[in-house]
Amino acid sequence: MKPVAITERKRVEEALRESLERFQLANRATFDVIWDWNLQTDALRWNENIQTLFGYKAEEIEPGIESWTNRIHPEDLARVKTGIHAAIASGQERWFDQYRFLRKDGMYAEVEDRGYIARDASGQPARMIGAMRDISERIQSEKTIQASELRYRQLVENASEAILVVQDGLLKFVNRTATQMIGYPEMERISRPFPEFIHPDDREMVVDNYRKRIAGDTAQPRYAFRLLTRDGGVKWVEIGAVLIDWEGRPATLNFLTDVTDRHKGEESTQAALREKEVMLREIHHRVKNNMQVISSLFNLQADKTLNRECREILKETQTRIRAMSLVHEKLYKSRDLSKIDLTVYIRSLALHLFNVYLTDPDQVRQETDFEEVFLDVNSAVPCGLILNELISNALKHAFPEGRKGLIRIGAKRGPDGTIILRVADDGIGFPKNLDFRKDESLGLQIVSLLVGQLEAAIDLDRTNGTAFTVTFRELK
Image (cartoon, rainbow, N blue to C red; front, side, top):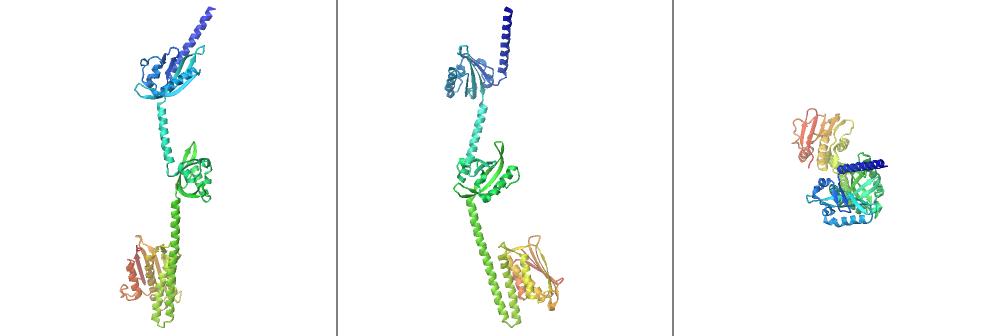
């Protein structure tokens, strides 16, 4: 029997040795401070990490619980002691707390500490073995994150723009400004389909842009729409949105600016502009009508005049009135009341003059060379009168005794932005011994005066018939 007892004892001793070795290896491998407190003798031992983490050498730590508790921050000490004694007295197996522990350099470290209570056969507490972990960096990171979140919250909640997060078509977050803008309390707005807050006429546009942005496609960066408020009102807002990750899934971060007042101002401005446009059209219409009345009076006077020369003068005057009236007629019919299409104007003017001066429509042909040119009324009226005189002059004098021929009319912009008008005919030609700038005929005098008014240049080419070229810039 004796050899069996010795063998069993050796086996137990070997098991204890191996267990101790494993404990010592684990003790060295851990990053925590491992402590062992004998509750019956008050002896307290630490592993070498007490120096690594807090700077104390083993010999600098006095034995006993006081060497530990004296290094706990005064504001935490009472709580820690109370917690330990309560755990021991209540028969609990473990104790846990977080507190500040004094390092050798005089600074306090934030630590997490947990202890496991071992009891003897009678149930009395015998030992408490624990592990203390330095969590200063984690606490600092948490404080930094909390401070960052606080700043973020302050920025978001105090932003003048409404900020919303939309995910799966539902409102997931709104800031204070958004709440004030739409008037819905949190329970009524959160996790509610966002299209319900949008005016029916704008809903399709907003939803389409949301779907495109969620899919990663190109969507409008900023646009305006109407928002429905809880009191049944409507607010115009301008939205800017970006795609974000919200809790691991795609969502849109939306910034809404209340532009109701601006939109009302724009509507008032548009209404005023429409009213002004109607007024200007009416003015041009009345000017045109008044000029037609004057032309009709001249026509009546011509019918009662037997003198052929007087009738010709009256007819020429009528064509000049028509040239000015036509400017107002084109402006009245134009979409843009500030400018007229010069090529359309010239075609109408030429058609009128050909009907006035030609009894045989096949006698003189017309060719045109036009580019798109627009003129305001300040330049259009003198330009129209110049064209009237040059075309009339060609029709009256270039093709005597029924001679057939061709009149070419051109209008284009030069490379330097100037406007170039050209009226040319292949008729008998302008008299070589006549200076058109000093001619006493009323028509050419009018041309010279209007050329000066337009600050234009005029050239005469007698090479093949007659060709007048007028070059000018629009009047400022």
